[in-house]
Image 1 (spheres, one colour):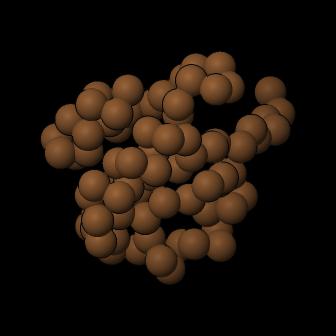
Image 2 (cartoon, one colour):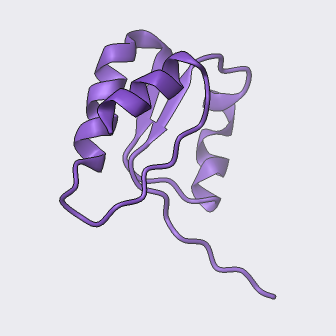
Length: 77
């Protein structure tokens, strides 16, 4: 998992890790964030509503964003 995350980070591609608890998703995101260094921002949990709070921080950001846990959003159909 760490190797694929690093390859995607270097290629500037998105990767979505989906696995049950205890499979190393958080360890993987922690490792990648440390390897990438200063051009990475890590968020432990983020929802669509939470993006409003970090809009200025992400505006014109040219780096890597690692999100450990995506929160669910309620949608009306």
